[in-house]
Image 1 (cartoon, rainbow, N blue to C red):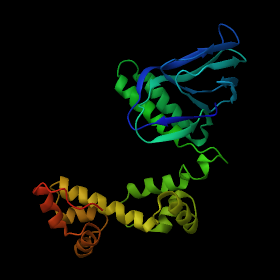
Image 2 (cartoon, rainbow, N blue to C red; image 1 turned 135 degrees about the vertical axis):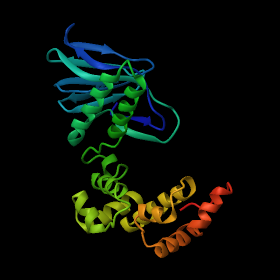
Image 3 (cartoon, rainbow, N blue to C red; image 1 turned 30 degrees about the horizontal axis):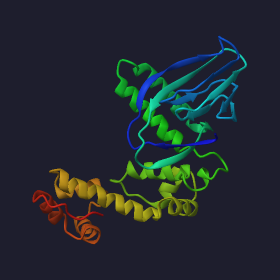
Image 4 (cartoon, one colour; image 1 turned 180 degrees about the horizontal axis):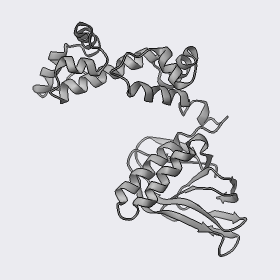
Length: 268
């Protein structure tokens, strides 16, 4: 088995998390977890066979093995690793994930989340589950070089960086060159990557996210309209009014009035 399919629509149910030890009883362990997924983050070298498929374990690699799968570990010496045993929801959007991946630049963050989960378990299992859920999302978005997943199903890291930069600065004056610089790529390269990943231009994405946030604040908060306009980076009230009419089909006051009347209202 080289790949598995996961759904991350809901938090995992974590049944155990901690530091695992292999090797003390011999050089080989063979087992399966009939009902549980197993997540391992490795700092050592060994060999793993998953349903007959060999995977080399190396420092910085992470594995995600589905339930009822026979695994065979062959060790060179006594080894310890971070692990979690868990249940995942069966419903929701499904993603194909390699059983074994290199964590790459994500290793420090993945290690931190796993260690936080260990520290939280068993006193605050909800916190532990939240940390493991964060790990799973990052594992699901790792893009092995040259793999089909890395060629389009998973956004280029520059796109994720650009989106995070935009979301943190919707109140500021944003330009495509500035976003591209933050993402570490050229203007033209970001434009190509962004279009392939989102179907939007960078400018269209910024406009859509600003209006979505404006709609939320108009409908759900008592902030003044000038304050909302400033928070979404369109401080000119005339421009804000035009943007709402163009994207939402109504003025800011009308959008708020519809909310007060309990009407669902337009969406961007």
